[in-house]
Image (cartoon, rainbow, N blue to C red; front, side, top):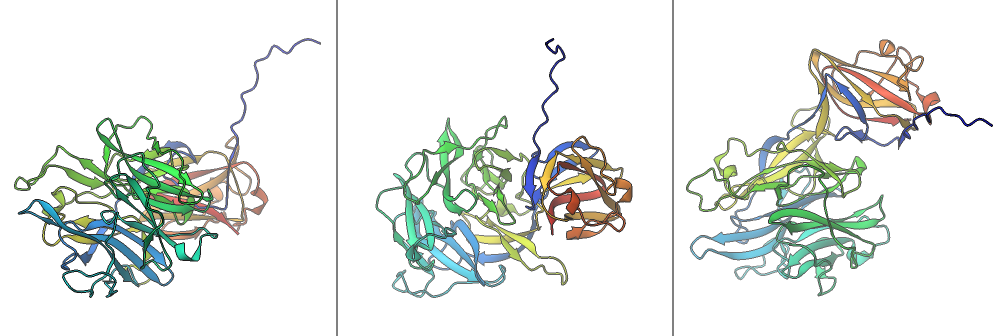
Length: 461
């Protein structure tokens, strides 16, 4: 038999299986080509001050804030701390608790647990080891013990400590020895249960070649952890990342989001401030928790407020909340929190808001642009978009096969003109909306955008 001398045909890249999960356009995982369009980061809008750290047990260096939803409540944890400018020492450091029903108005319950200046009328929940950066979370592990439904990490000189609580208020150490010892821990370190991985994940401060970096490890029981690894940012320039604020995005838990505080130790803007160093908030995302895409442009700038140009401001709190907007009839939005006036009397926490899924969008100007996705396999019958256009703008979308050929009935010319500003819009092609016959097949989406932003898409029944 004559041997075939023709070169082998290139192997097709396997299609991604996305099922019906929400996909955000944060990276190039689903993007094959952009023509006349670009990915661009979006910026949270500053809102009101939600917490003025003016109680005697708080002070001008109160920080390391954590927020998370818990039933009908929003919970907040933070360090109450004060720097004495005369002695050049920290006067005190305690862990405090607050709660809210709307994410805007926060109350400090009088818990009566710890004495401060001869009184127990305060919201202090911990004064022991690790109070410098005590960071709790609610454990989503279905097998976790009732007395450890809430967990936390905090650090001392030797490493990361582990804590447990039945109610998020009363805490105790899980053991005296640290659970992680490789790294540098003078920052807001954190941990959480990852339901998709079926393990606990922690992120803590690292220090490599004089640069503040981030390390991570995993555990099945919260006590025994894998060897910590440094996060991989590819070819991006190394920067001081002071905190990390990493967590799975609750609407798309296969995607990790991070909001580090970027620290520039040699810059100084306010002459009379004694310490050098400026900070801003940056944004990054990951599909596996180890390899990251990081935007070099700021997510939260210091802005025009002079006090945000002092050292160690603009630290994004760990956690985001879904809150109601000020305008009636507008969809729910995301609330994030950032500190300001650090080292100054009036140290406080400000709320910032962002549209749902609005971290990064694919944008095209009025002249128009296109986005072609990589091939993927979906489940469902409807295509749902989160988008925004101007009054003159529009989006249209085409469903194509693996090679990019339009699927009959779902061509660009058959698609409705989509314009407006919606978080959940079901796409129609003439009278057709049902994509069920294409489910399970290799397909692509081709978007045509004009003065429009596309934030996310998903397939639904």
